[in-house]
Image 1: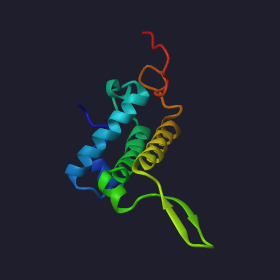
Image 2: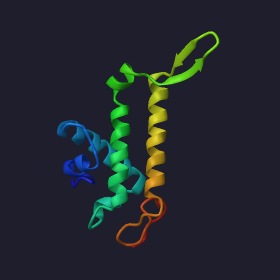
Image 3: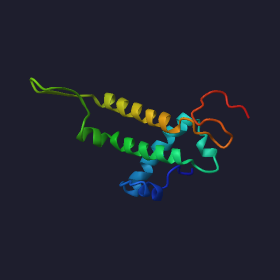
Image 4: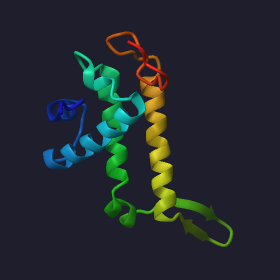
Length: 129
């Protein structure tokens, strides 16, 4: 399976993960992009720059979504200043917030990008050849 973003490209974009952590995050990000694009990117001659940038953003979100990170720094769901009160969301709520944000990144970054045959990457209808 060809990576949409190589480790060298990741580092050039300012990435800081180790190569082993990058590999897992890139794989998860690629699978999510494949879901939204019906794997159209995999059959392209070259991976578009928009896809590479999308994967870069997704890797950041995947790192934030890790169970260890959520346990260390749960997302604040509400804050009250008068009586000083803080509430934190459950892990499932936090995962939903982050996955929704990742989906937004995909939709915004890949909107209007087409594959080698001119089919929009985000097109989810019938793809006739």
